[in-house]
Length: 251
Ligand code: NAD
Image 1: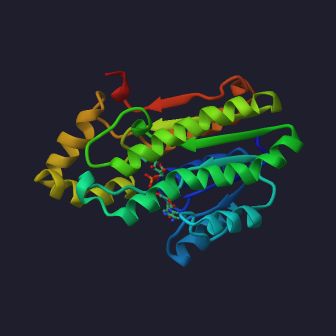
Image 2 (image 1 turned 120 degrees about the vertical axis):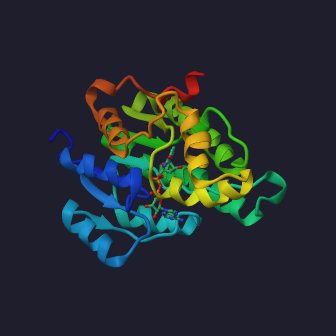
């Protein structure tokens, strides 16, 4: 229980990767603050399970991030994980989707860091963990906003690492390949339309074909990496972009 006494805020923790990270940090004794959307009863059950608070806020709006950070209070571990995807060719990409994806996947992380860092500096310890993606290192067609936001998040992370290096605060990205979550499930119909493929073709020939292991990454794998990044042994890991993509970006 090496995280007893630490407060962890995990954005987008009502499902998928963020929920797995919240569970893993709770298991190590951290006080967890949940964020994200979902059914009221399901979120209440998660709060019970994790002895956590949930702060509802739309993080695609600056005021939403400010509400979340004010409600959370002093945060020792900040996991910027909330994200969304939209799949369409650039010339057909809905401009409002572009704006929302950049706001949620990139600007919200900047704002949360901006508001969390003063406490981390005064506490003399902090961990910033950003869920980036293989798409922070490489591109795929039809994902202009997501790829742009995730490359930006990787750049933000490196900048944070340099600014915070002497304050015992680390900033790193974890960059998964495809993880079977709602985010992936939801992009299948649009990918079928954009590429003229069946569902199975999308899974095999678009998603898993990128990963030499031909397997989805598990949310719990990402969560274990997040826990490791909180350990003292990881104090010298900062500014890193840690790939967990079954070899995708090695090609
Ligand atoms: P998910 O859809 O299961 O979870 C997304 C979370 O973000 C949910 O809790 C949701 O409620 C929350 N959220 C969405 N819009 C929000 C908003 N406007 N304000 C506040 N919260 C909002 O998806 P996931 O796959 O677990 O994705 C988590 C992160 O992992 C994302 O940043 C995603 O880009 C990244 N990622 C996912 C994969 C993958 O294959 N699933 C791969 C690489 C990176």
